[in-house]
Amino acid sequence: MTSTQAIGVFDSGVGGLSVAKKIREMLPQEDIIYIADSRYAPYGNKPRQFIEQRSRALSGFLLEQHVKAIVVACNTATLSAIQQLRSDFTVPIIGVEPGIKPATLNTRTGVIGVMVTTRTSQTEAFHELVKRYSENVKIEVQACDGLVEQVEQGDLTSNTTRALVERYVRLLLDKGVDTIALGCTHYPYLIPIIKDVAEPGIEIIETGTAVAKQVVRRLSEENRLTSKKTAGSDIFYTTGDVAVVEQIVSYLWGQPEKVLPCQI
Ligand code: DGL
Image (cartoon, rainbow, N blue to C red; front, side, top):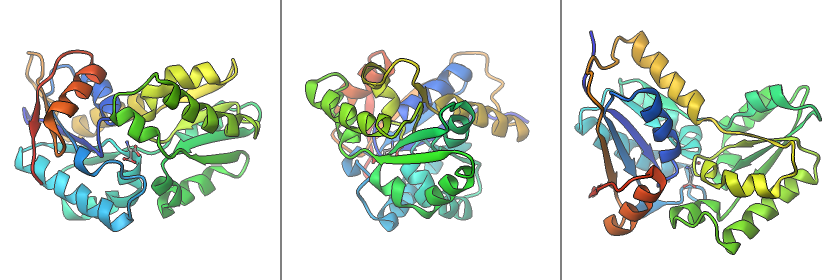
């Protein structure tokens, strides 16, 4: 059995495009439906119940579009709401988590940094993840308020963005980290600045590729990879301002894209 239904992807905003892009590269024939919950971004300073409620609404919307799987392309939503989503819905639901495990395998100093949103840093699931890998490695957690907002504005290079990134990365470097895991799907868009401010030899770990591989694995286990031979389509929705989001989606996706409105 194969399935020509689309893969649904959601995030609080445009950050999840960093994951969707890896899925697109790995599965060129699959259709992808992406929804950015831009009206409510950022999630990082919102209560857990709110994120759960939005995650449920976005998943419900994607299922109305008949998706065969849902990718929660947001660490904050994954760590706050994935258990709830898995008990509410029966399609495969794939989440993202900060790459703490690969970071612990990479470190030589024995100290790693994790950049996350404030909400992520407060979730129980994140605390458990940190605890699981803390035995032999020191894990320094840095909440990075303001970075999601910069990426949401498509501002990847200004002095303001640079100053924010520099402050957070410096705090981690001062603690002796040699590896930094990016625990938010917006942050891969800031890698050029992070690399710039980090010292040479600092490894940056992002999880987009690992998540895309997990999507391939889950769909092939369920015999639900498409049998289509033609290129898959990309459909983008937002709960926010369509004209604004369209510009930023096109910029981050690397080509002009249309964005459709979604009122949920
Ligand atoms: N991309 C989301 C994440 O991975 C950002 C959450 C937010 O909107 O603060 O955590």
